[in-house]
Length: 401
Image (cartoon, rainbow, N blue to C red; front, side, top):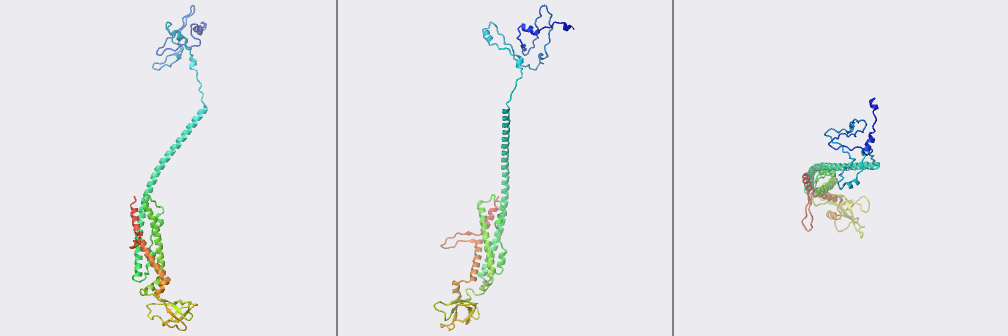
C-alpha cells in the first residue's frame, strides 16, 4: 500500500535535536488563546510532513468552561541586556514533568487514630444522651411535682372542710352531753331523785371524733397551730368518753343505794353501828359492831330497847339491851353511835361511790364548758372547754383554701 512505502520519520529524535528537553512536554497554551500547532521545518531533500491534528485531549474546551491551570515547565525569558538576567539564570527552576504532577498520591490513615476518633465520638454521643435524659427527667420531675403539689393542695382543702363538718357535729354532741349531765346533777342534788334513765341516755351518746378522723388526711394549707389543736382535741375527747363510760357504770351500780339515800330527809343518816359494853370491857377498850339492820332516822318505831348486831368476838349475831342509864347491866349492853360522827371518821363505801359519781359528772361538765379562774388568792388560768375548741377549729378549717 502507499502508506507502507512512505519512509518512517523519527519525530522524537528530531525534536531533541531542535532543543526540546528529553521527555518533556510542550507547555500548555496560555489561557484565552488556542495556538496553532507548530510543525518543524521540512528537511532538505526529504518529503514534506503532513500536519497531524492535535489529540482529542488538546482540543480546547467549549467557551464558558475554564481551562485547568497547569504549571508551566518553562521559566520566563529575560532580556539579555537586563542586569538581573545573570542572577535569574542561576535560579532557573528545573523543568517539572506533567507526569510527575499528575502522579497519584498514596494516602495512609492511622487506624489507631480512626479507632480513637470513633471511640471518642461514641463516648460523646453517650454522654450527650445521658445529659439529655437527665434534663428531660428533671423537667418531667418538676412538671410532675408541680402537678402532684396542686393535687395534694386540692385534696388538703377538701379534707380540711370535711374535718370542719365533723367538728361541728362533735360540738353538737358535746352540747347534748353537757345538758344531760347537768340535768342529772340537778335531779340528784336539788330534787333528791335518782335519774333512772340517765345511764341509758349517756350510753347512747358518743363524741365521734377520734384518731381515725385524721387517717389518710392531707394537711396542705392547714396552719400548724390548727393541726396541733386537732391532736389535742382528739386526746381530750378520748378522755371525755372514758369518763362518760365511768359515770354510766356508777349509775348502774349505785342506783339502789342512791335511791335509798335520797328517800331519807337531807342530812339524816341511819344508825348503823353500836358500841358493845360488858364485863369484859376494861383497859383493852370497847368493841364496835355493825347492826344487823340499820335503823332509819324516820323509823316510826324509833330505836328499839334490844339491839341485834354482829358478834365482835366470834361469828353470828348477838343481842344486848340498849344502854339507857349510867349503870351497866350484868350481862352487858350496847350503845348506838351517832351516824354523822362515824361517817366523818369512816365513810361508807356507798357514800364514797356516790361522791365519786358526783365528782365525775362535774368533771364532764367542766371539760365541755371549760373552767373559769376562781376568785381568791390562788391564781388559776382559765381553760377553754371542748365545746369552744371545736367551734374554733371548725372555723379555722373552713377557711382553708
